[in-house]
Structures are given as C-alpha cells and as structure tokens.
Image (cartoon, rainbow over all chains, first blue to last red; front, side):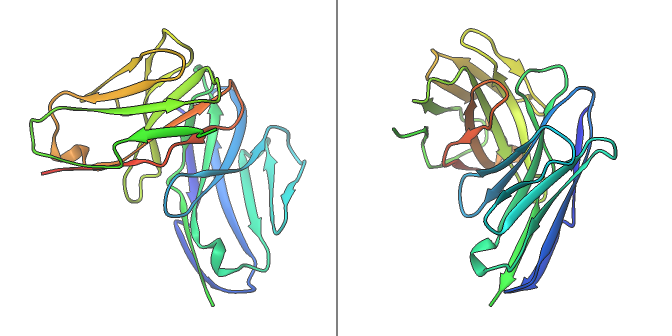
Length: 112
Length: 111
C-alpha cells in the first residue's frame, strides 16, 4: 500500500524566517510527487516533481525530489503571513493511473 | 471557464438520510476524483474515475457510491448518512498524470 508521511505536522514561525517542509513516501510504482497549498478552501497546485535532483522554483518557494532516499522537501524563504496554510504532499503512482495518495499535511502559521 | 464546480457548498443531514453531491468540470479532463478531508488526516480518496465509463474504489469507499454521468460530471452519493461521514468533500479532475484541479468543497454535517 502506498504511503506518504509529512513532517512536521505543524510549524509556527515569524515573518522573514525560512522553513523546510518534508515529505517521505513508500510506493510500488513511482510516477510523480506533487505539492499543494491549501488556504481556506480548495488546494491549489504548487509543484510536480518527477526527476531526482532537479529543483523546481516559483518565487520564494522551491522543491526538490530525492528518488533514492524517497523524499521531497518544500522550502519557503522570507516567509510572509500569506504563506500561512496547509501544505499537502501527494504521490501519483501505484497500479492506478493518476490516483494521488496524500500525506497528512503540514499546517504552517506565519506570525507578523 | 469555471474549472471544477461543486454543489451544494454546505449541507446538514440527519443520520439515515441520503444525498448526492454534484461535481462538474469544464476542462475536458478524463479523470475525476472524490476526496474527503478530516482534521489531521490530509485528503483521503473515496472513489475515482480514470475515464468516462469507469469508476474505482479509493482508500475509504465504504458508505459511498459514485456515478460518472458523462465526461464532465461525477457525482457522489451517500445512501444512509452516518455521523462518521461529517467531513469536507472535495472533487478534483486531471488529465492523466498532470496536476489535479480541485473544486471549492462541500462541508457536510451529519447529526
């Protein structure tokens, strides 16, 4: 059974701090790993990672995948209060095409 | 282009009542999904439809049924609601291995 574990489960920081969110996975047939940000409503897509060692970047957010050690990290530099959200990591793979298995999520709170 | 839409936004049911949650997407995606989200549990897949005419169970299918009515619409039915089904329900769609797009969610309370 595919499994995705995120850590920490919650994190409280102050504006300007840098945070690293972790996602480890156990899968039978890896296809891709995805990161989402969820504020009040629906999750919104951040990154999709398929290859090891290639960093994806969008503004202050970046993510990288290590397929040998089976984990991914999401970095946020110079955090702002608008970064407060639940960050979800999901793996696409296994025997079912397109099916995502999500971790529990990391709740990030950024104080002014 | 509305993306993924869900109705209703909120619903309160009594134990034993039935209801159908509706989902539609206008992105011409082949695959559609139903998730539930509970505190501390992330998103858990209930059912999914890889393409029109097919449906498969996800991680937590018990107590639910689905219908893929056509390429655009994917509904989730609770035949006899239970308090354990109190949750936020999200519908999503995707094209093959690309990112999933989520609807705004339905907050369901079963008393």
